[in-house]
Amino acid sequence: MARVTLQTIADRLGVSRMTVSNAFSRPDQLSTDLRQRILDTAADLGYVGPDPAGRALARGTTGAVGVVLTDSLQYAFTDEVATGFLAAVADELAETGLALTLLTSNGRDDDVIPARDVAIDGAVVYSCQSDSVIRRWLVRRKLPLVMVDQDPVAGVPSVNVDDRAGARAAAQHLVDLGHRRVAIVTLAIEGGTGIFTDPPGKVEGHPTRERLLGWLDVLNSVGIDPTVVQASSNAENDAQQAARVVLYSMERPTAILCFSDVLALGVMRCAEELGLPVPDGLSVVGFDDSPVARRARPALTTVHQDVPAKGRLAASALVTAIAQARDGTKRRARHQLVPTELVVRGSTAPPPAAP
View 1: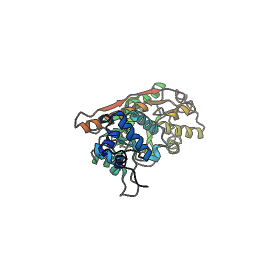
View 2 (view 1 turned 60 degrees about the horizontal axis):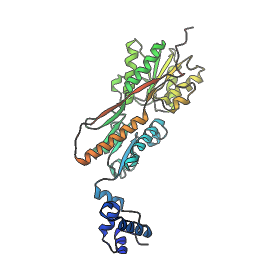
View 3 (view 1 turned 90 degrees about the vertical axis):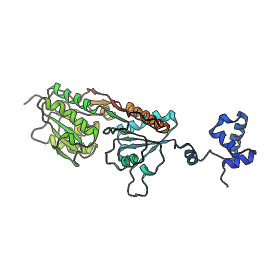
View 4 (view 1 turned 135 degrees about the horizontal axis):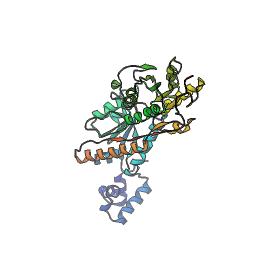
């Protein structure tokens, strides 16, 4: 069966191709009756509308935006914070009519690099390393971008959580309860699992560095030098392995601050295998206030970040950046900070009395 085109419809009705095109793209140029005749004929012939590639070429826009959810989609779709962020972005963009395209790393085939090859008008880049292949290609394309959970870049809008303030609140909570032997379980800084001793200012990754600095702001100010242990990934099993480094030590901490709720859950599982009750034998604090925190038993004391707000701000900032690029306007890029709040639940208590 021959492919149905605008010309096919025009020939059937005895009108020009432009008239048919206007029925789809400029309906105000036609009478109501003529437009309806064209649409009815198109439906009878099985015509689904103008070719998207041709329409994009004519308009100079694709009608789609990219979203990068970390450097690994496999990890992102098992992380409830990342999926919550994506849902908020999608919800904010729903009324704009923009389609979402998830961009992945190029894998093993250099001939196929989505961040380089996929047609998009701009992208939200969420929690990627500065040397990420995906991020580098998007920057090289000079597309409108919004960076999320990354170090702000001059001229590029960004949205970050106030990680440092949230970490300070978490550490201060433990200090106020009377804890003086405190450990930290964070994401891998040097690779692998083990104790970290380098200066925190050199840590790669905005949330990892800012949370570590926030914890140390408070702990160091009262003379506490915490053991910092890194987990090789943000997974419960890796957190358990990291927790064993400090919980099996001679100088066992009475409290542990964790980079995420997922890591905190792993720490609680390790405490359970040692017969160490939470919170009477060990206090545990997470970060994110994800669904994991409410499922934990006892429920997890954690730092709340407003993930839906972060997603909405990122999507709105991208729509603005695309509009400015289209209009040729140049405004100062906004760097927005989402506030945090400590949520105290059942996983923290004063330290156990010395025997």
